[in-house]
Length: 141
Image (cartoon, rainbow, N blue to C red; front, side, top):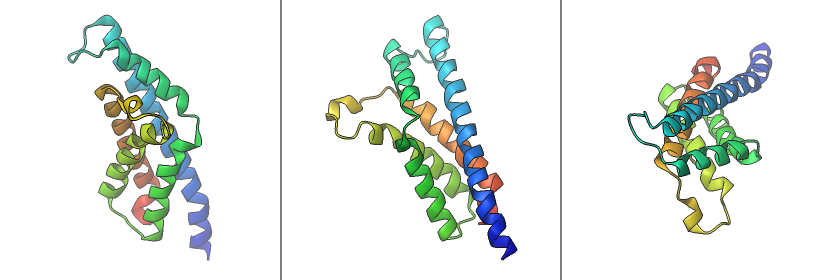
């Protein structure tokens, strides 16, 4: 009984900390991409459209659409008692990469064209968030 209560307390805390880590990576890596594009000194040139895409996605992160895929990942992982780091890391990247599709649901297909820089930032942030969740709660599912 005590173990179950501990899990009930640990899971939301681990999820919130993983979300904070994800947001930190999104904003820091997104800012790095924006600065590289503005200064034109990056190893891979990022067009100005990518800057606008990153800023637009950052503004939409406050919606519920960003939490649903990650919550589903955590619920499935906890219900199935999956302890694999690969599940949480890759799942976190996929869950965050799906966010642009969910945010733009109902819009024409041409709107879904995002620059590769946005997909890289989102996937990397999702990998980081999945890793943080696995470290805190996923190892002991």
